[in-house]
Image (tube, rainbow, N blue to C red; front, side):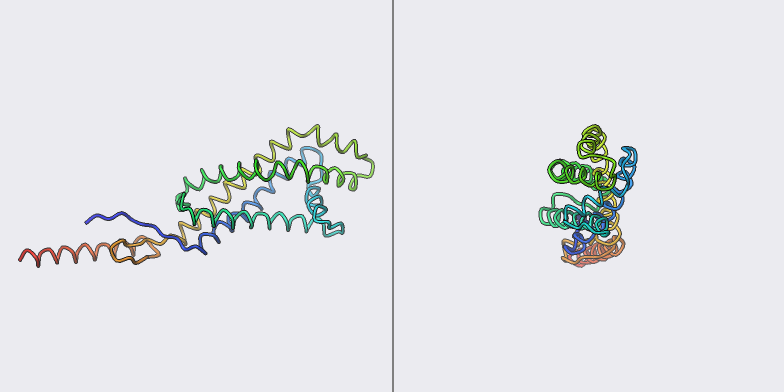
Length: 219
């Protein structure tokens, strides 16, 4: 008897795995972000303060608020993508190769659809104002020139950051799904098993029972 292994996933577990991957990805992308900002001669904490100012937090807690909105955005992305994948079933994230592919696609899509307009119309003006606030010797015109002069570096850095985010998201979510999320379903009995070895043992018992039944039928 030959059967195709059918793999099920718990809705809550799969969305949770993607959200965890998104959080880890959001933290990981801070590394290239910090490197690129320091290379441009900007304080590593500047963008966090700017994010906080977007939320109209102008106290000493603005950087914390900026980091908070960064993580909340990542969690929101994780929830949306996790629900989308589960409902559509277009990709089995329990395969690492799928995770890498979809990570690259996700990172690129988030960069193009979400980050570019937000960077252009919201963050850049706020970053200019924040530079002037942090460095009192710089005028608005000088700060704006600094951003425009490094525009290519900013875009390249942003692409790399979002690819790092996407790849990390899917490596983590794929790893968690493989370790904890996969449930192997027997199509004959319509029963799920948490591990492949328990599934294989079950199928072996079914095969043996089927062979016994055939022998009884022959005799």
